[in-house]
Image (tube, rainbow over the protein chains, first blue to last red):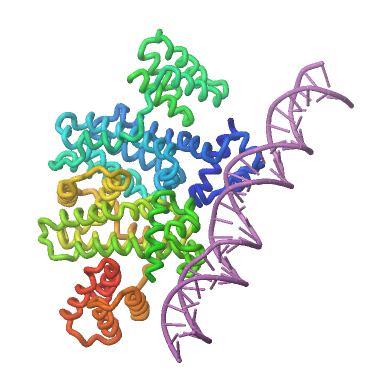
Length: 278
Length: 278
DNA sequence: TTGACAAATGACCGAGTAGTCATTATTATA
DNA sequence: TATAATAATGACTACTCGGTCATTTGTCAA
């Protein structure tokens, strides 16, 4: 299981330097210091590697954002904190961003395209949730446009992180964008993006619904990766709770909180959270 | 010379379907109905093809935008017309957008990266020019941020054109974004992007300065592509004027206007315009 | 020390690549 | 019509790719 992670990390480096098609399995194995055969013990094909990578790296992003959005920050600072955490993520994972937000391996491989798209839809939902919390009914007609604006700000300003290493004042950036977002949310009067348009755009990629079985499978997968620890125990308990819930909601929320702090558990925490509808 | 264009058009189709690395020269020649050898009569290598394509396709974009920005639209409608022409371009050239705004062949090939970057800088300058015309001194401190916001809007909303064929109301979209841009320009108070930051970001790609020689070379290249026509004659006259100018400014402006209407002359018109400092 | 099992290796395969060049077809000229 | 000049061809080369598998290496318990 550690081997898999090593391969994914090194592959990400190479993809971000050269692109997906231009990087050979040979190069990946060389950088890992393993043989070509060893690669195919971890992944059946090169495509399977990419698919796994999307999950491994994008989950961190999405979970991060959702956590801020649903956190207990005061309304006055929520937008600032939102942007701060977004760009912290961009800074930390600039290689991930280079590969998955810019490269379009996706044209050809439908499966991959849908996967990345599904994550983007997840993110959109988190943003919409935040806007509803902040502005409520007043923004109803314009919330999708403001969401598009926010994503536009992200894409535009993220360039600064992705293609150069200039030291930047994250606080100032977050404040600047939070102000712009707030200004638009308060003043905009001409909507363009409607509920139906959103439906149309998102249609091609069927939403994955969380079933008991798929959730338990995900939890088991994550447990495998973990050494003995509080996090592992918490996950074991949560797994049992998925079938029939006996603990009270605060206890479950606490157990989720236990595991959210670990980077490689953020995704499972996010999904369990969704399942228990916090 | 027509052969070159045929190859570039068909190659663009394939690149937009499959990506650059995944498309073979074989496939391109098959779609063109020519032999592999014929391809290498037009382009020395596959890389040279891509380099030519960047010029061929992006020039249309940039020249288009610059023309609207410097046109004589009233201030009240300039922003709307700007967005309208941008998204008309995205709609018409969605394949170009798919390839050059999303694909990152660029990671590996420095030359290509710089080229695309140079065009983006050109576009940024056009936007800044427009903002200065519209808001003047009042926006001085925030103009770069508003420019980044505009580019963000473009990137975000362009998704609608690039990845689906949903029929969209361009007028409504242009109005909506023009309003948002105006709102931000009038209300924003916290700048983030400074003159120096822009310099830093743009530094890696040396600006190409227009020399007499390079301009004459460009004009000659363009003339080669043209059949006998008013446009060709106008270009011949303009070429003579580059060396020592004898005509008055209105005449030169008229000659430029003659050629701007042809799609494949927009770029040369744009560059001549710059040279004569209109 | 032995032997059984799993993990890791890298030479190898067929497919497909970019690019070449001797040959053939087409056009222009005399 | 004959000849020179140019355009176009596609079999060919040398190479890289993703993926396989017989073989070697390492790790245990007995």
